[in-house]
Amino acid sequence: MTIDRSLVGNRSYWQETTDLNAPSVPLPARAAHVVVGGGIVGSATAYYLAKQGHDVVLIERMHPAHGATGRNGGFIGTGAAEGYIGSMQRLGKKAAQHIHELTILNARLARELITVEGIDAHFREPGTLNLSISAQDHAEAAASIAARTADGYAGELLDRAAVQSMVNTPLGEEIVGAAYFPGHALIHSGRLVRGIVDAAVRHGAKLCIATVERIEQRDGHPVVVTDKGNVLTQSVVLGLNAWSRQIAPALNGIITPVRGQILNTAPTKPVFAQGMGTDLTPTGEYWQQTLDGSIVLGGMRAAATNRDENLYDIGITDEVQNALDTVLPRLFPALKDLPITRRWAGLMGFTPDYVPVVDAMPDMPGVWAAGGFCGSGMPFGIMAGKYLAQAAVEMKTPAEVAPLSLNRPTLKK
Image (cartoon, rainbow, N blue to C red; front, side, top):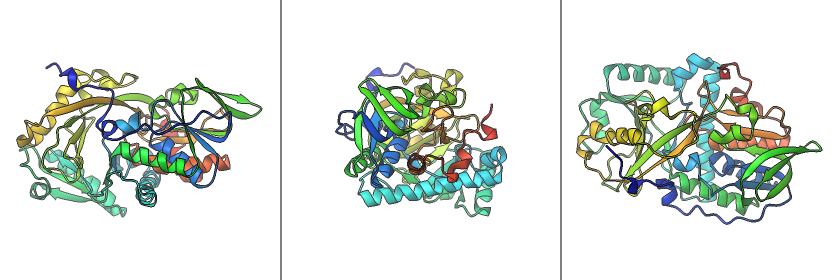
C-alpha cells in the first residue's frame, strides 16, 4: 500500500512538540574546546565542560536534536544493543559487565542532570517490557534474565497474565509473556536535549549554528573549519554518530550509517505505561506512549532492501512504513484503528561488534569522537559526554571508557 505522503515530514514527533530553535551566537575565532553535534552526546559534553567553568563552543548545523537523538524512541535503558548474553558471548564477561555498568552510570547521570537543572523532559522510570511472541522467545528471555540477575542486574520474567495486568488493552494470541526491566526510563528526547543545551549555555557555553567541513591542524592545535569561519582550539569532541566518518577518516569501516523509520499515532487513552519492545523481525520493534497519549513506534528495518544499511537518506519508504502499520494491530487487536499522524526516519550509527566508540582519533591530535551506538545512544550519551569532557580537559582518554576503545579487537570486521 502506498503511504499517505501528507503525513511525511522531515521532523519527528519530538521535534514537532518542542521548540528546538535555541538562540545562537556568532562563531568565535578561538575557544578552549569545541564540541561538534547538538545531540545527546554533544550537548552533554558541552554541559559538563561549561559547568566546570571551561570555555566551550557547541557547533550544530541545524538545531539541537536535529539528528538521531531527535528522531529516536525516547528510551534510556541499560546494556548494549546486542543484549547481555550477546555482549558476553562477543566481548567476554568482564567487558560486557564493564559496558553494562557504564549504562547504569548513564541512567544515574541522566536522573541527576534533569533534577539539578530542572529540565521538564517528561522523564519517568516505569521500566520496559520486551514481549515474547513464541515459546522460543520466552526461553531466551528467561536465559537473559537469569544471566543478568546472577550478576546483580535487575530483571524479571513475566507470564502472559502478568503482562496483561500491565497493559491496558487485550493482548494478541501470540504474546506468551515478557522480560521486564524495572527502572528503565522514558523521555521526551527533544525536550531533554533542548534542556541540556540551555543548561550548558547558562553555565557559559556558546551555541553556534554552522556546518563543520573538516578539521585541520595549526602549530599542533586543531582548527575547526566551518562555513561560518574557523575556530582555533585546544580540543575537539565529535558527537556526530552516523556522520562521524565524514570528519574523522579513522571511523571509515567502523561506523556505518543505518536508517531507522518511525511513526506516531494520534493521542489515545492510556494503554502502555512501560516502554515496550519485541522481535517481530530480526531487527526489532519498540514503542512508548507519550504523556499526551500518542504512541511512538519504530522498527521493522528488516522489511527494507539491505535493511536500510549504509546510506545517508532520511526519507521514509513504503515497505518499512507499511510493515510498521501492522505491529500494533497484530499484537493488540483493539488498537487496529488508531490513526497515524506522522512518519519520519533518522540515521543511526552501527559498529561491527554492536558497541559504540568513545576514543581519541588517530592522526588527529586533540580530537575525540563518540559514535556507533547501534540504536542505543540514549543509554550511553550522557555518560559519554561526561567522559569526553574529561578527555578534552586532560587531553587523554579516561580509563573508564577503555571497553569503547577504537583499538578493541572485536571492532575489526
